[in-house]
Length: 219
Length: 219
Image (cartoon, rainbow over all chains, first blue to last red; front, side, top):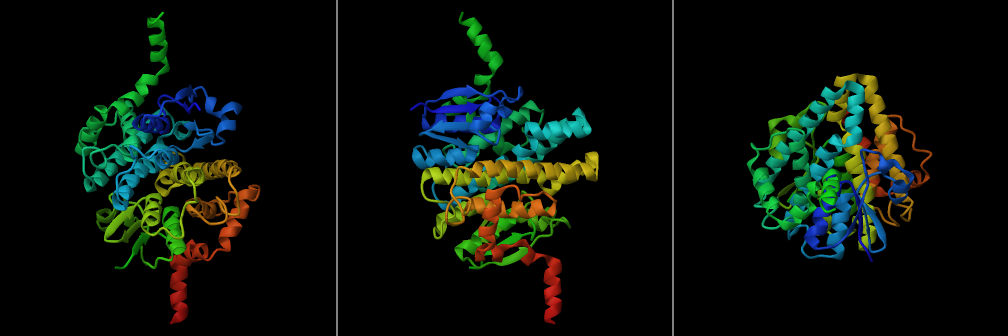
């Protein structure tokens, strides 16, 4: 049965799942949902996911939502390679890093929240809100990572924490938040950049304008 | 070794952990952190948790943060009663509900975000922001719960999802968000209200003004 991922190329939560699928070696078809055009609020997508969010993963005859719940499902049903380190303490640390990104940084910078800030206080307030949120959140994550071994967020293999961190770093760069003064995060970003699953899942591979360009090149 | 929970009586994330500790029958000492007074940004608390957040759970010689990671740690190390239903599909559904609350509703209504909204646009904008966020979030959660059996969020026993839902419902009531038109959520709230672990963990038990009153009564 085909695995199908409904995603948006630049959505952090979608990207987490693309990394996990690549790490597990699970092939999938992609169904792009254009968040900027509002596809996520259309009847078709709401029938798939009443949350009006991406990602939605169709797998094993199910429709799964919430990226971190999807990662746990993949680990439950396809244990190798694991998305969490071994041992309860290590797992709690890796989960805490993933949640510090998914529950503290990401929701406060999502499209709907930023649109609301802009409606209340204008585009400059929106940009400042977003930059401050990402910068303070990543500084906190850097401090949390002092407790864990490298080169990835938790030891020698990528975990759920790296799946959450890498898309967040892309957003940091996109909004002009410097991260060069965060040495642990910088080293993790480098380790992930050299990993084939992270390369395969990268947002830029799925940028529709690039896809259009590639298709044009192939004519 | 004493288990110690650093919490704030009305913090949703703290409350989730209090419910889980009560469900597992784990005794603990409480260390109140006054979020309104700013204790969470003091050097003492930041040394415990660089995120400047509650809860922090001291257990097994560790300091754990991020409420949902703590719940998973408790399940990993003290499996009974479980905080997740049996089977990968049921677990994914229960986790998705917990995350829809912890990642979508709660962070957008936290104290720091609301203070920032008020600074940008005033107290009425803050109240509207908070009400709209909670109302739309709970409507979405109600729709998600159509996929799962009752009387709790997932079947006959409370799970991580109920630990997340109950504190969020308290906040809904506090900010005047009606939930009577959400039948599944209303029934879950009733099931939880009749469960001793949820009664023991309730915020009102830890309201400092009530605690002060009780101490006065006992003189």
